[in-house]
Image 1 (tube, rainbow, N blue to C red):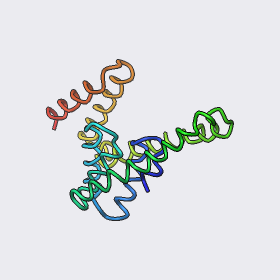
Image 2 (image 1 turned 45 degrees about the vertical axis):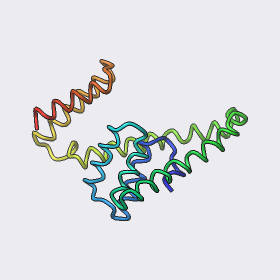
Image 3 (image 1 turned 60 degrees about the vertical axis):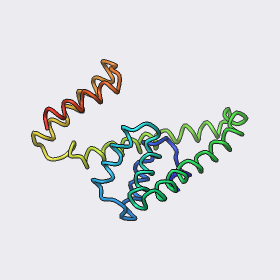
Length: 167
């Protein structure tokens, strides 16, 4: 199901995967959060990586294989169908309007995933030294990415180092 509704990319699909994981009881919230963290750091699409981790956790290698195929094949088929017709219809008023209308929900899904991830990892929570230090790391990382335009890998490595020192 997730492979068929992958509008907006991997980060927008995290809430959809999370709901399925939660509804089926495949993992705890903390386990799923750890999966997202690992999937986000590993090469490849985060939604596919996450699905493979969830599949492996629930049914080992066969679960990982089925999860990978279920994420990739529907999306591939949809992209092939859309690509066949897109260049003929991409200037169509209704097609443009539909894609324009999808932008806010995709952004909302990504923001929802970020907020949920922050709450689960106590980045947002009751005020304590730990929460404050996480918010400072977040703020400085965001500033470094947006204003200083530092490379994301450098910011990730530096944040990891700061985490090792502080915690």
